Length: 300
Image 1 (cartoon, rainbow, N blue to C red):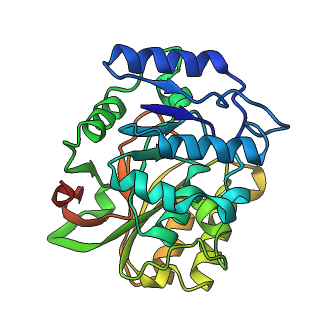
Image 2: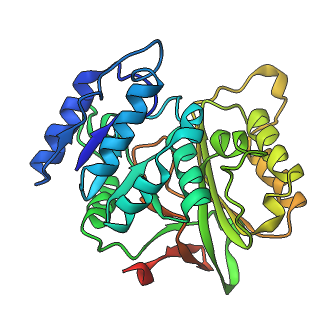
């Protein structure tokens, strides 16, 4: 397992060290990139340092290449990412894992190479907390490492229950909403048609969430999907000016703008309980009553 820092500087080094210790206790051999704790302003080293870390991750031969943390920094590297080396690493069964800012990397790799990466935990935030890692997150990560995972499931709100079984097949893609929206008009937004788009975000007020969804709508992205799945949108504060405007308002508005179903409650985002999802894989989304499933067992 290879741990590296392609985005923001690691301010809490103890959390990363604690996360590495826990991964080792789980039986994993872990190598920490020599530039993982580099700093340059808000970044984990300047662009050259972080690009070198990505190159080492791709060349490591590790079963998993996982980020220390998200933050910001990958979008400025997209024109220079070593796409051929990353694709070769994935073909050799290295799984690149991360979330948040890492979405830019995932979208770009999908757009440039068609390869699958994994939306999942980060070492510091998810394995390095002062309390023990979330059981579901850890179990999903172990399934990923052991290539045993065949899908994930969750329970929908009562209002989204389906009287009749429903399913759709398509490429699963997306992850962090701000990152996906920021790639509109660039070569690194995957041109996925009839896909299954999943989205989450953190520290974004619902009006900002709506504004980013509007950008994807007006750019024609949302209309091309078979389904939109919303994970967790956390760490925002209502203000008196809202007058009842909240995230539910945004979801209901979105449903009036697209023909495809919009499901909520996906256990993914900046939360302790998160599943691992194959970005760029062909999956089946199935709903029976309130039970929703994303299935990708055919990958194995």
